[in-house]
Every structure is written in structure tokens, then in C-alpha cells.
Image 1 (tube, helix red, strand yellow):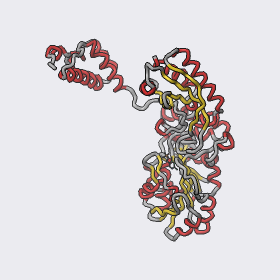
Image 2 (cartoon, rainbow, N blue to C red):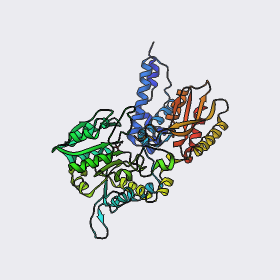
Image 3 (cartoon, helix red, strand yellow):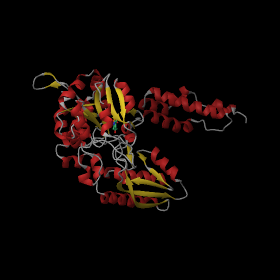
Image 4 (spheres, rainbow, N blue to C red):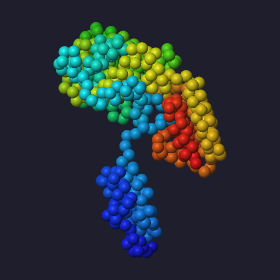
Length: 466
Ligand SMILES: *Cc1c(COP(=O)(O)O)cnc(C)c1O
């Protein structure tokens, strides 16, 4: 195909575009670097198309929309809110837990200026950053002492480094887990300088397996929550109580990585069984327990370490703690989140993760019906909208086998648009909607969509279908 030389000559120069009214408006509104990048990229794109023999528009009017979209894309925040219509409450890829209003408020207050992060107001002297949460951790878990680091992976790493470096840590082969792709117990063990002493088999580990492995080289028995998987069939694991009893006899401390770390009894409250509370886990007697701040606890990303003072002391003094320490904004959110747990009923009323998990199914159904009604007003024949019974999971490595009842709005698009195209439109638009496809239908699971997002969600779906 012939290259249109005339068109190439007509293509505006970068400078001409920048000096045009539009160009000046862009430069006034956006960073110069991004305006230049966008103008250059769009002109270059057109040039390549012309060289391929294509006939394209080259006037300012024809170039401007593409440039503007590109500038806006470059200037938009990369990390931004999405509507989670998957129903998975603790969704690691979507940021795990939403914060309570009081936690958000506390972050804003502390972010705005100086704080007593490491300063004791009463004494007018240097203080400790962990002091802001220690008492709350003790009150809410029943432990003797507590602190927090960057995340639970860090909590496990620093605890094992401080308590078992150069010595053996006994772990059941049924608990050598990998979580979230990069947290693997054997790797964490290697990194900490401790020696992993595997006992038992994948499906069965007995008390005698631990017993036989204990020697003068043993520093710790580690119990790890299986989190995101279950071994079913003929299985056997040793309860922490029995490990603690064995440990007492042999003078070996027991550490428990709880993973999620739930502070309220979900079994008693909602019939969601299988996750012991942190308080119950503390009672079982391990000297150190670790859990996440942003899983079932419903707070910011953090790794919480609670246990006996004597064993937390070397952790506090370990050099890694400085590298893994929690920042003031997280601390502000964590303190406010923990404060809500002083009264359990308050906690389940204000912490979004708990509210979503514990919301009665009937109430989720009503929200689904409201959404369906809103949609039916705007979409007429472009799709069939139905409210259907659905289920979901808590996510975040807790309760992987425990289905939670929910309701979804099912959208079966008419021939004009495929379900995949609909899913993509919802995902790419603003605000982004993350939904799930089931056969020919798109499912919007309402357990994770609060009332406050319902209108925006309805508008997005209507837009996407028309
Ligand atoms: C989730 C999890 C971790 C990692 O916690 P992060 O807070 O994501 O670092 C470690 N151990 C167990 C058992 C877990 O479930």
C-alpha cells in the first residue's frame, strides 16, 4: 500500500500542539512531563499508522481526544478504590480489610502532624512505639504482652529469628504451608537461621513424632495454621494443648502461627465454625502467638505478636524488629481497631470485615433485591436480571471449607454484549467493579457491597449495558 506523503506532512509538530490553545490548557492543568509524553506518543502512533499505509485523521481536533485520555491516564492514581462484588470478604488481591470509621479518623489525625509515637508525654522522655497497643492487645487476647510488626510473615520471621537461630524448630509435615505465593514456612525458617526439623507425614502427625524429635538442639515447637487448605480423610494432628504439655515436660517452648487471628467467636455468633479465637489459642498455653492485622481482625496490614513477656523480650531486642517495625499510620489504625474490641458488640457493629461476615443472609438478600430493582429501571431488554441464592467464603486463609450463604444479582446480557465484555467494561470503568462470571451470567455478590456503594454499582452496570 502506498504511503500518503501528504498526510505525513500535515501531521502537527509537537511544538505546534503545545502552543495551541489546547496545549496551553493541558500545560496549565497537568505536569509538563506527562503532557509531552502524551503528545509525542500520539503523534508517533499516527506516524506509524500512516507509514503502514493507513488513512488516519491528523488534525488537532482529531488528535486531541487521544492525547487528553493519555494525559489523564498518566496522572490518575495507580492505587485506587474498587467495588468488590466477588463476595470474598478478606480478599488479599483487593486489599483485604476495609477500616472502621474510627480507624480512618485516627489515621487522618495522626498523619496530619506530629504525635507521641515514641515519646512519653507524662515523663517528657523517649518512649516505645509498641506501648500504644500493648495494653489493648493484652486486654483483647488475654496474653501477658504484645507488639506488632509489618505483617504476619514478618512476625513469624522475627519471632523464629529471635528464639531459634542456629537451633532446631519442630514442625509437622502437614503444616509446611505456602501462603500468598511467597510465604513458605521452610523458606522463612531458612531465612531466620533456624533449622527446620520436619516430623510426621502429610496427613498424620502424632504426639510421639514430636517427642522423638526433641533433643538438646531443639529451640521451639511450631504449630502453623493450615490457612488456605485442608487435608481430609484419614488425618491426625496434635492439638496445641498437648504440644504445650509435652513442651513443659521437655522444657521446649511452643509457638503458634494462627494466621488469621479472630478476636470474636464466629461460631457462637454466626455458626461459622473452625476458627478458634485468639483468646482460646492463648489459653492453650503457647509462649508466642502470631496473627495478621488485616484478616479476620479487620484492621490494617500488620503482624501481631502476643505471648509471655519472657519470650517477647528477645523479640523486642532483635535487630530485625527495627527493620520490620510498624509505621505510625498503621499503628493509628491498629490502635483504633483494637479499641473497638474492648466491647465485642461494638466491634461487630463497626468493623467492616466483621459486619460483612456476620450480616444476616436475609439482609444481604434485601440489598440484592434493591440492586435488582434499580437495574430493572434502566436496562429494559438489554439483560435479564435476577436475584439468586449464592455462597461465598471469608477468604484471607481462614475457613477455606466454610461456605457462607449470600445473595447475588445475576445479569444475563442480551445478545448485544457478551458476558465477558460486560465483565471487562465493569472492571475497566470508574469506579472499577470486580465481579465473577458463572456460565453466561455475571454475578454481583452483595455480601461485600455495602449500602454506600449500591448506587454507584447500579449506575456502572446500567452504563455498561447501554
Ligand atoms: C496469612 C498467613 C500468614 C501471612 O500473613 P501476612 O499478614 O499476609 O503476612 C502467615 N501464616 C499464616 C498461617 C497465614 O494464614
